[in-house]
Image 1 (cartoon, rainbow, N blue to C red):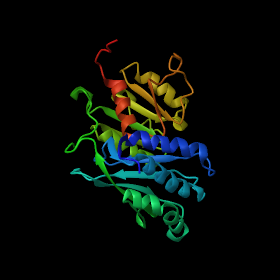
Image 2 (image 1 turned 180 degrees about the horizontal axis):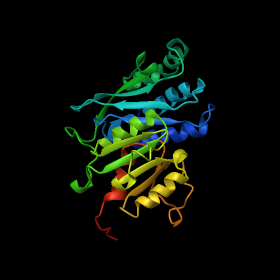
Image 3 (image 1 turned 90 degrees about the vertical axis):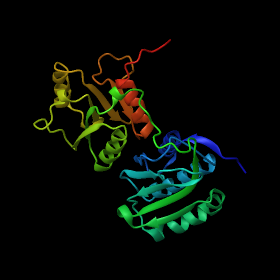
Image 4 (image 1 turned 90 degrees about the horizontal axis):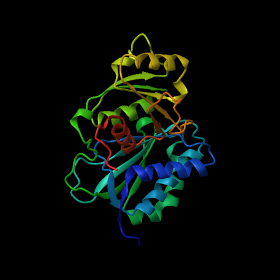
Length: 274
């Protein structure tokens, strides 16, 4: 039996997405991660079996003609004394209990026993699968796992322009972890309500970025030094392309760590030591 090892929960979830994106018959995986602020970055457990169990659960859900976005919420207790239950909840699944749980129990029974884990179906959030596994954190007693290097990087004014409520919820929770002041535009930008020049950072989903927003961002930059971040599956511009308007690109699916890295890239003013 493989010994428990430390792993990065953000990296694991990104790897699961990449695997499913290339190996799922249902088409492109559209996953949205929602992290509780109590979820550690580094966890310890049987990472290889945990990875495969999550892949099998999510893939089974996607195989049931799930063409919409799939929300995966990760939760953990506030305090880790030793091994504590970490919950992965796959929400709003497009299939009833009897249509998926017998297959999952049959497929995963041996792995669940090895992990001392459980899986159950609940009626919450339109029907959810909850996979609970005991894990250890790398820093016992720690309650804040992502620390920005300077207080001047906190409480920035940020505007999010995104298509879906689920994505808005996910991004808002992750930005407010630090904490940041968040305004939201869902489905379309309201130019009469929001003055872009008043924000430190504006994040726009690529499907909503149009000529109007392009013009408004250029006008706002004549008044202030706003950072414009484009959110999408893949940046069509190269890093050195001077024609692009955005100062950074945030790739889907977004994790807590990728938000942390974005804030460091945009707001850390410390000199880089070669």
